[in-house]
Length: 145
Image (tube, rainbow, N blue to C red):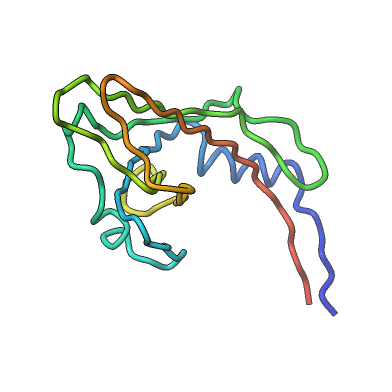
């Protein structure tokens, strides 16, 4: 019978420090309405629909975590401070930024960390902006059988 055990605060802090602290993550907008990406989809499949760089001023944004962003350990988990990526349209006439997904890439930009499908296809024009918040919680549960 499986027996769950919480991973220690020290181990979660080590994992957080190795994987997230002092790392920069890029956030991209993807225009692939109707797509439901799976966890095992390739980066090229997901990124094929990335908004064309420069369209309406689009460029990938970045977020990063510092030691001060790591919260206190509680009940087998550690939360990070909330981070935000803001995309702003540059007022270019006849250029609309359309997107259906938000993707956070790992620091080497070789794999997605998270892919979020929006409730509906969205667009930015005329100086509009969109802010996406990232609330990370690192869970540590070990199951022994």
